[in-house]
Image 1 (cartoon, rainbow, N blue to C red):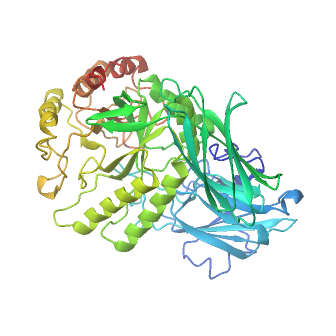
Image 2 (image 1 turned 135 degrees about the horizontal axis):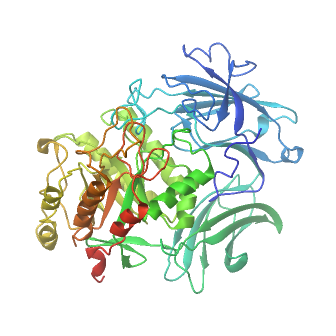
Image 3 (image 1 turned 180 degrees about the vertical axis):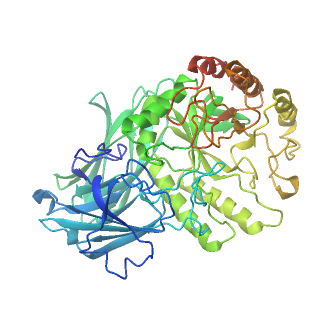
Length: 597
């Protein structure tokens, strides 16, 4: 059969010697969580089959089980090319929800906790020339409060803004052949003005002195290069590009990056990637991209698909979602309560689509110390995976967290995550708790969520923001706007005049005739017709565009998801309104863009 999702899952870190393991696997639901005691990790034929990488809840998986599955097992056989056997063989998982334990030929290889982030095991010692048995045990206790679950429903069925669960493998599984000493990871920082690209490169299993070379290419031609000789596991190397071509949404120019490793003039390893020359920073209440003030025209994207749930049915589907958004005049998205797969970010880089990347913190109990540590570990993995994508301009750490008065443990934890994120990546802006309780005065972006549907009331919420901004430097004061939660639960840090975004608004409930959905919901009264919908969208959006103290918006949402029918497209991506009408509204020049920096 054809291999589903056959494309390389990491175009930002790609080698030639790869073997995609997607396709048909054996599968078993372990209702009693007793599979390990029964020895299912080797020699056990499972009674069902599943199409990986689609989660078992999805129709594309061939299973379609929607009940809770707290323990599931996978099994398949694989062969590796004989010329791989002298090298190291890495087994990669894009994501497994939530805890995965892996065996090869009956040998336990390792375990990983974290449903949204990748992990890798070196299986070289256990691989044979003939058939090899691969077994995966996934545990997913989404109601425990100890693991992030995003928008996955903790009830049997979907409800409100919670949707079908995802269990087990939901991203590509693949093998990779690497030399004994190889390039393991790199992080880069770019300067679009000077053309300087600084790289920090990690080499695994260093045994002797080596040479690391870095090349930047345009159209297959080398335009900059550098090399360093070292015997250290970590090295810094800089390349300088003459006549640098910056990356921007209007001109998403990407350079090819090639890293090569040599030892005593002998070639060892090569990794291909890419980069864009892009800077993002704040200046008072403005967000600057490459030193130009930009109003963010974002839309909420939750990364769900009718047939694949968390997993896009194809690479083209990932690209199409970005194109559908851009057709309506949005220049980016808030990737909401999910760590999106790397190929979505690849297409965002290629197409010039800005991203606020958000951790799916819902489902985890922040008052539990163990839960906090689990979240922190997974967040570090998410940042490390995605730190090189030029499309990402904002990290959003938490969503709609209510930090109650006196709850210093949770507030201090949020501050800890802010500090850690700044250490991991000092090049991007940070939102601490989107929409509700901001606990830290050092946050880069101040945002609110506001689903008021009456345009005149909505406008009144922000009428005083301009005046507040004028006096913010000399007299910092808490924001005085209606909040979606009770005021006595708030402990908002004072507003200091930083960029202000309405990061959720709209959500207009609209089911066009013939597209009704049972049990559907949205915000406010349903428009009488499509003209009423457009008029409301126009009034709400222009309120934000034409306020010179507001730096961006994020409309809820791009497409419907199951019972939540407040998208501009249906769940199967059919437009509810002519995209030209929305685009015409969105592309108007914002007040903040009129001002000089």
